[in-house]
Amino acid sequence: MKKALLSPLRTLIVLVGVMILNVNPVVFAETKSVEQLVAALQSGGHIIYMRHSITQHALGNQVTEVLGDCSQQRNLSVEGRALATMIANKITQLAIPIGQVYSSPYCRAKETAQLTFKQFIAVPGLAFSLRKDEYESKRLAEQLRSMMLKTTLTADNTVFVGHTSNLRDGLGIWPKPEGVWVIFKKTEQGINYLGMITPSEWADLPWP
Image 1 (tube, rainbow, N blue to C red):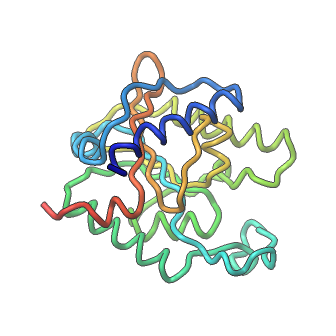
Image 2 (cartoon, rainbow, N blue to C red; image 1 turned 60 degrees about the vertical axis):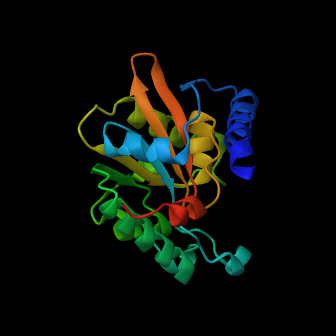
Image 3 (cartoon, one colour; image 1 turned 45 degrees about the vertical axis):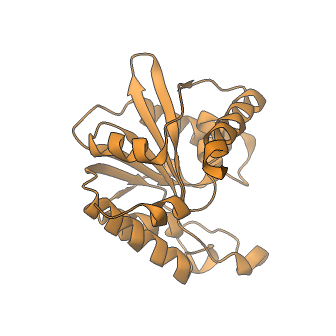
């Protein structure tokens, strides 16, 4: 019963986010089930936005999020590294083709990208947009939106590894919890939102 209610609830949350933020770069079609999303990814040609894996929240306000200094950032926890490794194994076992991977330059995003996808390009314009001034937050949101709109269809899936606020501000979608995948399909009409795969749903997926 819970799974039957989950997709409509996610769609409602996403639509509310879009209305509040007044952004409309995304086309909302019927949200797909996890099994349908995996099948779509296996065919390639999709865009994946992965929020970084689970972090050390116990640090609270002790970190200042200084870019370039991992000791001053909220980094992955042991659980977060295990999650990223588990998803990497699922990608291999499910034969999901991965092409270019772009990552935020923050350490938690880069480590997630490394553990999950092995190879990636760190892009300064994908930096964490939260706690920035209004101009910088909008610029970073536009950078993500622009990069996603410029992706080309290939036999592989294009990946962006980043943060909540960037996707929220850029496309009006809240990627929660940590480690979630948000799946899109680029079409002539724009970017279609297809659904999300959460960490617990990855864990529940059977091996082929």
